[in-house]
Length: 91
Image (cartoon, rainbow, N blue to C red):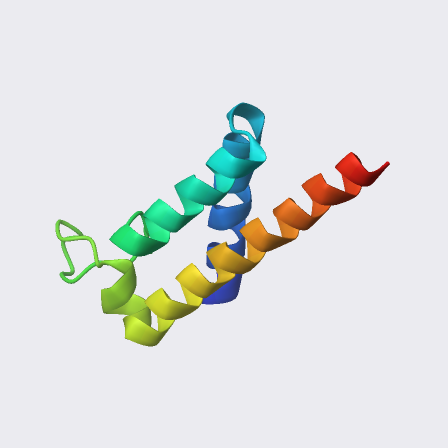
């Protein structure tokens, strides 16, 4: 799976869970906290060793630009969701 597919799938799943239990304001707060803490990246499925005992981090596999792109994508997904909330309120 490519980085873009992994990133998109992970964020989509995360937002689906968040949307079920969070208001618009809480959704924004949750996303901002995650971005501020810079954590909860998906597993890469890659390992540092051949025995597969040391999982490789997202940053280790995709680099700091990959981490940045992940958080940027998270922010864009949340902004899109907020726009959808606002469209529903305007009806």
